[in-house]
Amino acid sequence: MVSSRMNETIIYDHPLNEVIRVCLRLEQLFQQIDHQLSDMSILGTRNLINFIINVLHILDRPDLKAKLAKELSILLTSLQRYGNQPDLDAAKFAALTQQLDDLSRALIDSSGKIGQRLRDIELLNNLRMHLASPGGGCSFDIPIFHYWLQQSVDVRKSAIHEWLSDFSQIRNAVALVLELVRNNARIEQKNAVHGFHQELLDPQSNLRMIRIGIAKNIAAYPEISIGRHFFSVRFFSPLIEKRPTQYTENLSFWVAYCNS
Image 1 (cartoon, rainbow, N blue to C red):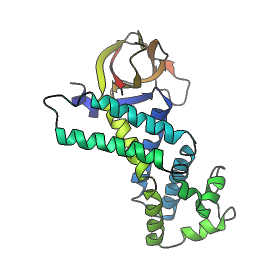
Image 2 (cartoon, rainbow, N blue to C red):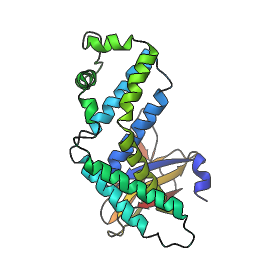
Image 3 (tube, rainbow, N blue to C red):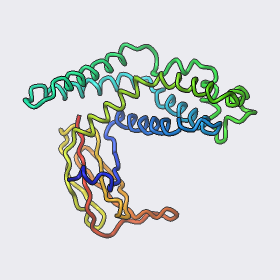
Image 4 (tube, one colour):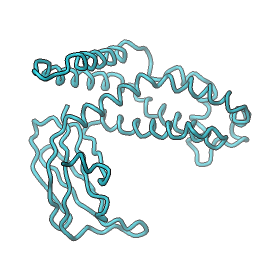
């Protein structure tokens, strides 16, 4: 019932560990990159480069590979528990478990940080410093970038697609982690009394993410607070230009408890 109303619902993903938080940030950046690829104007290209630089900033964490590989291994172990189900699609199951194992091993076996080759490209390396400043990347900051932006669309597009290919492994890993976590969810309908709901959590539940779904026609948005033993959500009226106030009426929403 909930899934059939997804198009009429605003969904808020709330990560419960650092790996899922990073995956959600990367997912959003890759979506922005995909959208921007249709615009290879000079300004569109600048936006693409900004997104690529932002991806590299996220991938700078030296522990990211190990943590992501561990998350993939946990998901693989969890998935293997369903291997004896009688109605299981054996071929699909085998392909999925193999993909998890391959991605985990590839991350562990690779040398350097994810996207290391891009860090060694002088243009991108210079841009990482200059684009961190508001309005950075002007012709007087880094003239080689200004020169490169004046090259033909084909030249710029070819370079960008080559650079993006270095993200294919991490992109596949992020997509698979989030797909499995979101799909392995228990969904419950809830009611927020005067815009507030609180409940106890099982500390052994090993949750990866909480998802909140609220109908688009309700003028409210959630602020989520989660500890080891409790979960609360407070809804606010969306006053864009003023300080938001708590939603005072009762409202219905759903919660997806996403495990590994």
